[in-house]
Image (cartoon, rainbow, N blue to C red; front, side, top):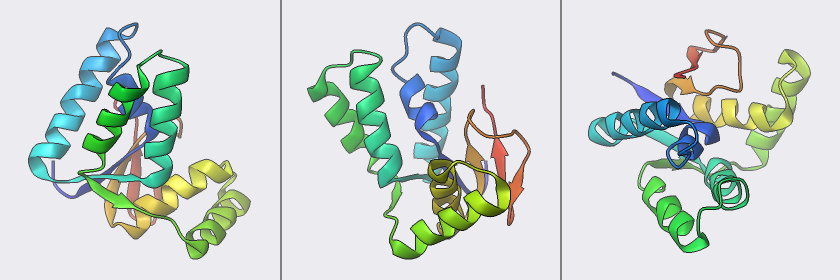
Length: 136
C-alpha cells in the first residue's frame, strides 16, 4: 500500500470487537500494514472516539483502552484547529456529510492521505484525491 491512509474510528474499534471476528481480523491486518509502512494517520477526534466507544460499547477496561490509544497515537496524528472546523462545516454544507465526518475528511485531506478507511461513508467517494475505502 503506497501513500498515507487515514483510519476512521471504526477501524480502531473493530480491533477490539470479538463479536465481529472477521472485521476484527481485517482491522488488525490494516493496522499492522499501516504500522509497517508508516502510512497510518488518525486525528485527535478519532483517538477520543475510540476510547469512548471501546470502553462504553465494548466494555474494554479504561486502562487497556488508554494504552491502545497511546499506541495508536504513534501514527501521524492530526490536531484540528479552527480552520479545520470551518472546513468541516463547509464539507457538511456542500457534500451533505455529518459535521463529524466532515472533520474526518478534512483531517485526511490536510495530512495528504490518498485513502480514508471507513465503513461510515460511501465506498469509492472521492474528496480532492482522497478516496473513501470500506475495508470491511
